[in-house]
Image (cartoon, rainbow, N blue to C red; front, side, top):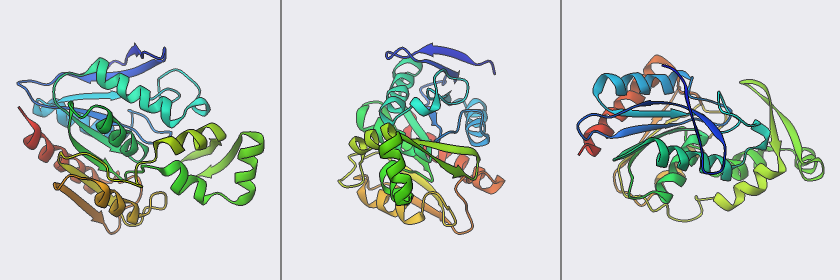
Length: 252
């Protein structure tokens, strides 16, 4: 599939792929994780499934990620939320299901709150709302926290490649988007997949999301031997099953 580009209202040139839905079926919008992109296996699996079943799909890269323009270290929760809403508003029509992985789960919840008339359902994989404060900042040493506050950035070793640059702007901006300290006003169906051996997002985080969501139709699946990526064949099969469930619930 050829990558296309659009320019967001904020002037950021973002890469995307798009499959239109047929016969009133929903569009599934893929929301990647922190430092991840639409070329990942789970994103491509959702796109292939949507194409085969007549559902729509929109995959895009946040600014500073994948094939989109911008520097990763310039990104904040505010800017990636803006990118998410721009993709929703520019690239899709009709009912939406947001499929968010890790940080993308936070983006999905923020977008559902911002576009309640469009978002009909959520599929969340190891969702990480509030991670900049409750997981990232809380997990840094005092020396790393001091380095962020004095130098503006610290480099944190990553299991997924080069070290993560954690900036003061990311931490401070993230504080205004915390959503786990109050009810999350979304009443559509939600499916959450969470590995219990996830070293990045502890599984009790998913329990807290479950408690905060106002929806009564929330199914949380805890995968005892699952890691953070949940990209094994059996994990991807669970993801596609959750999307198929959501398609049946949200089709016009």
